[in-house]
Length: 79
Image (cartoon, rainbow, N blue to C red):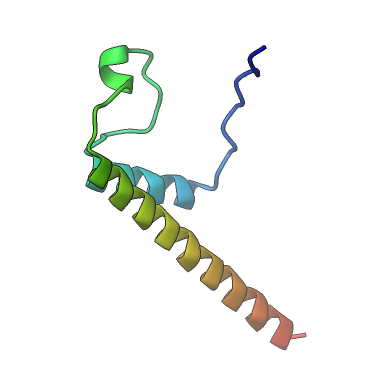
């Protein structure tokens, strides 16, 4: 029995833009929007490109977490 497809989580616009930038830079994908066309929605990419894209996404997540942590720490000092 297959699981029903999950809808993607709605991400903040800044994160969506960062992911689109990573896809464009490392995978040469113009958009992450579904276009309902096999020719446009499916790509062949090298494993090293996928690795670089995943590394960039991981680093972006680390950076985002660090910024969120610093913002929270600043908010706590202003109490």
